[in-house]
Amino acid sequence: MILVTGGAGFIGANFVLDWLAIQDEPVINLDKLTYAGNPETLQSLQGDARHTLVQGDIGNAALVSKLLATHQPRAVINFAAESHVDRSIHGPGEFIQTNIVGTFSLLESVRGYWSALPADQKAAFRFLHVSTDEVYGSLAKDDPAFTESSHIEPNSPYSASKAASDHLVRAWHHTYGLPVLTTNCSNNYGPYHFPEKLIPLMIVNALAGKNLPVYGDGQQIRDWLYVKDHCSAIRRVLEAGRLGEIYNVGGWNEKANLEIVHTVCALLDELRPRADAKPYKDQITYVTDRPGHDRRYAIDARKLERELGWKPAETFDSGIRKTVQWYLDHPEWVAHVQSGAYRDWVQKQYA
Ligand code: NAD
Ligand code: DAU
Image: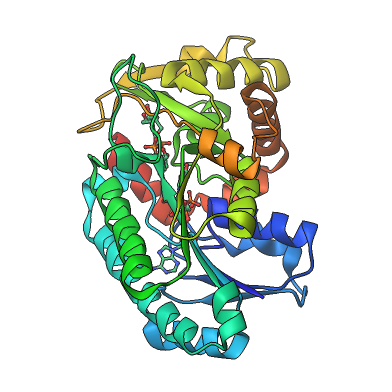
């Protein structure tokens, strides 16, 4: 049995679906079901005794302690977070609450459970914390990629809150001996990605005949990884990672945002041409830049490859094609997540 937090969000849900497709070890899935949590993503697991979705907050110590005592998981994998940089700029409070206070509370609940385990289970237990490359800050054009020993220099309320949570996880290992692992991953993309992040937003807007809003000059660089490769990296680190270590996860796919948008447009031109036969890139609009916008992220994932033999399976070309096709094949999933709350956000951000 494992306990996954945030397993109704983009990466957590992909992780749970992949986990149960590969093996039968059951999953308790604790998710607050914020705007970003979507049980519909997990619909294929309905009636599957191996999966239990519990609506709740990682910061609810009584609930978390009860779940741990009842289900006796051998590992906790913490995906739960507020994850959207733009939202953190409009309202940082939730980010402090969930990413810092929530992680602190979760660590304390887990510590209480873990310290009372019999010696063999105590030794085998793992707490894996899922974090981001954004904690390292921004790179200049020719800087080497982030390694695990790069300075922690977060620039947004989101990345600062994630960096704080990483520090707490580290401290709980060094001070209390909690057997932790931390992964810092680059930008993910793939199925079930909430359409307020760059790639799904572009697909959804393009198909709806809406503008494709590119922040600033569109030359900011991100390092893209197909979500299922992130999930395989997490499984590998859980299985064989050295305690207390950080593992960077990335796909060696640095791309400027504008290049990403052009790629999405070209794929849609091929797979679902516009009725007027004009290219989707005609819908690109340059909008005001994100405040404090990090210019470039790049991950050096050699430690993970060297120590644990992990490599991404997907190239960017194959992953982005699968992703665009997935959105074309799942219009009902998109329609259902475009709730009133989603429309309010789009109105506020792009007004
Ligand atoms: P997401 O926003 O899609 O999902 C987050 C999930 O956490 C949602 O299901 C939400 O309901 C849940 N949640 C939020 N607050 C909670 C709380 N207090 N208690 C319990 N559940 C709560 O995020 P994501 O993109 O799937 O990211 C998952 C994790 O991976 C995050 O920790 C994020 O920082 C990290 N990460 C994301 C990326 C990326 O590109 N998306 C890259 C690297 C790391
Ligand atoms: O690097 C990992 C991080 O990647 C994760 O930790 C975050 O949880 C995840 O949201 C993501 O953060 P980004 O800020 O990089 O992702 P986002 O999709 O919001 O934006 C990607 C880039 O595209 C960024 O440079 C901003 C730009 N952008 C985004 C949106 C939504 C636009 O130009 N226009 C847009 O409308």
